[in-house]
Length: 196
Image (cartoon, rainbow, N blue to C red; front, side):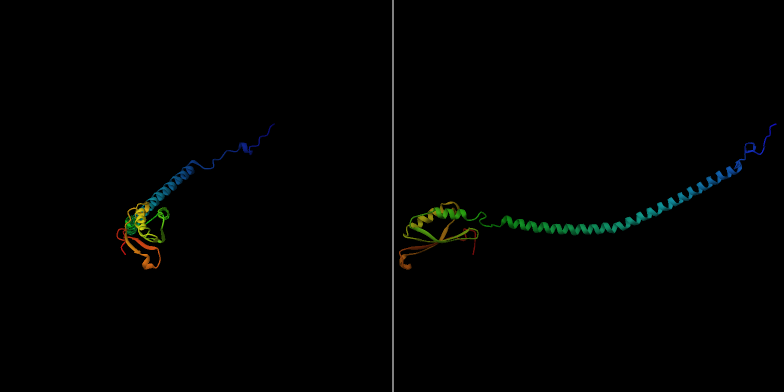
């Protein structure tokens, strides 16, 4: 004979943990909670949007004085730039209309002075004043007739062309107690563009 134990787990009736009614109530509770959370979230979002829009409007109001301040700053910068331009224009006008004399040196003048050689005539002193615009020459000669030849030859050479030697003084040997004539030549300061 076989014995059957009816208390074994396999023979026990299975119990449902949550009955259908409780399951319905739990799901209804979950739907209510999610609905309340979404309503709260929507209300909070609308409150935040209203706060953000009010902050943006306040920011626009605050930026308007900044725009006014920026305009004042731009006007000040513009005025400063105009003053700088005016100063630079004055400097440019000065540099364009101002003569700065000989920009290349006096080597060419010295070469031409050395090439104009006449026997019996020599220079003892020379000066280039105001960048070579005014020239002063002091010299000596054995014969007075050689001095005009020297002046004519000098006036025809490179850097001395167009210069007018208008101031001339000559000392004869009787005045100087020697056999040598001394002379002084200077360019006319008005023709050289200088007034002193």
